[in-house]
Length: 453
Image (tube, rainbow, N blue to C red; front, side, top):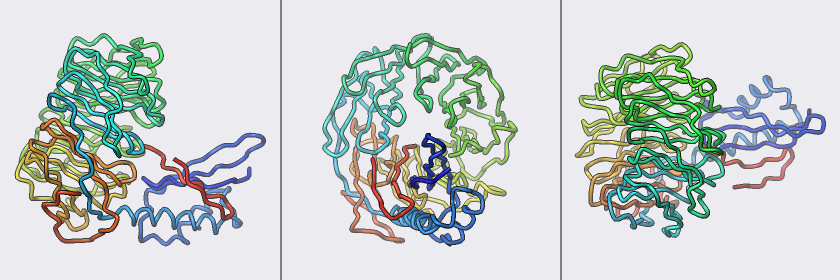
């Protein structure tokens, strides 16, 4: 085996080893979830070399340069101010959902007007309108990696797969007897999973549109679902207060995570799918081991219903938000202690997400604002204002250079990072202008460096 080059994944940090074995070129990925801006690069390189035969002494200088580049990207992602760039206005009725593409160059919106729209984030231009649903479009998603297809789920009890270039519907996914409220592509885009108010989830083939299985077992509406990284396990969350894990090869339920006393509002795998987090209207969040099917921790502290939960890229911290107008960050290790408390919104906080490097938290609220917080100090560093109704969505792009906020005022706003203003602490309020792409950079094992999309 001979190493050809390193490929760097910026968020979360990772090192790809492209090597030749015989006549074949292969790649091995090493996750560097413990790498921080304070890590000793020489020590990290030595530890990696001791475990990986491909990392010989001859490539040590290139290995250390690669690690330094990853560290620098983490530094660059920290604590930025954002400027308002575009307002996307085209839906004639309120929005229901929004999502970024992998690179942050395009986004999707769904609406009560029964359409999904595809947008160019930079220009604000509407690229495509996907029309055909007979009721509210509630869920929108891009196909993974290539973004060649768009997936929508609707209150008309169907999901549809669309060609992103032509706008044509290529598959209509039938079978549910209730509203489809979530729809996701599997990691390799061969499967689609849907969640419905009919108490079931279903799995379909993307190529044929054929239903491959109906996942029955929940006694309440299924409101959220996620595939694991390889696509063999599906996680579902239900208003019956439970989570379920399903084998997508057999369509059988392999486990139930029970303990919440009220409806599940959200759930999520961490990056390597070794943990599951959930939140509930019972005012608690939980961390679970999906292999042992057991609860590892119950997180208490919020005074009212929890609306959202998310891991940072390391899987070691968890953010929650609540109708009590606060967001909080918890250490997942040990006793799940609270490490940050974000207080300042004047309305329910319905969405929370970490920046790609994990140093900032973005929250969306019914007080018509989004806020940026520094996780280390719990400080509000910027209030993103301008929407005229409740916010229900916010997100960072993969590289963290763009933010997206969506509101019941029928608009999305695009906010671009102000690279001339970087700050560590102190409020920046009232400004008018604020699942896993790879983001690979190629480092040869000599000195040549090139960047690829």
